[in-house]
Image (cartoon, rainbow, N blue to C red; front, side, top):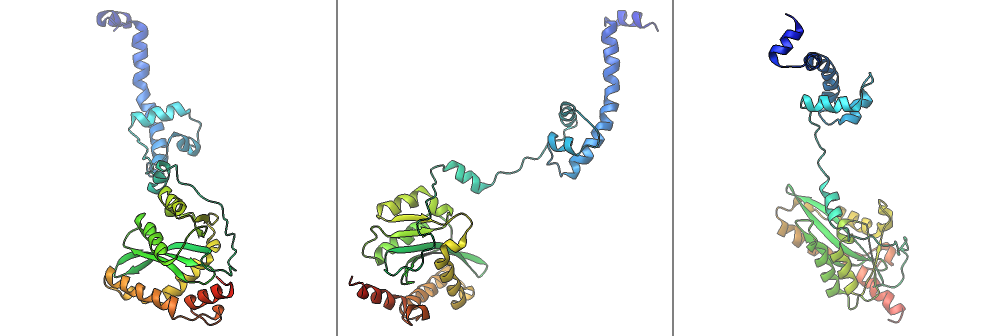
Length: 273
């Protein structure tokens, strides 16, 4: 049949007809390219965007074509789930780190002047508990602590409350920690400031900057059979007994064979405080 007559009967222009024919041929051509793209896309477990697909192609292909084929054949890229910790940090831009004012000066000679604090976890009976503690760098006494079944901010705030009960005055005392979420939290920073304390933080990823706490947690985990506890309450009582023992009964060679409390009193008497 004459093409011109056919176009006249269907009221379609000749150029429109030829464009239709051209488009009709495209699916087959697209399909071959689709198979190439899909092989790369599947190898990437549906996580590749057009840039990664283009980089892995062994043939040259315009990025617009890759995007068109991905959309045409429903090759939807899986979006990586955001890290919840990073989301928290983004939502809390007021979180701040502090200068490392302690700078590994662990040879303190006057108690109740420099404290270190940190958190460790204690597994028991298929569960986890979290211990927050504050250590006097000079006397090695555990001046404040708190145990919690979770990692909420209340854990470290209660530790500060316990510290306040045990130390007559916290004014101008340096408290050193790592750069963990709890210690950069504005609520913790404000509480430290209200207590008149000076905040210091380790350099990022450097546990040696907080060595006194690492040492104490190591001794605790060697000394205490916390994994045998069946309940959180049982673990709390066990730790309470250990803290009393550690401060008042556990003599240490480096403290002239005294307990932390005895050594604290010794240092205060020597300084005439």
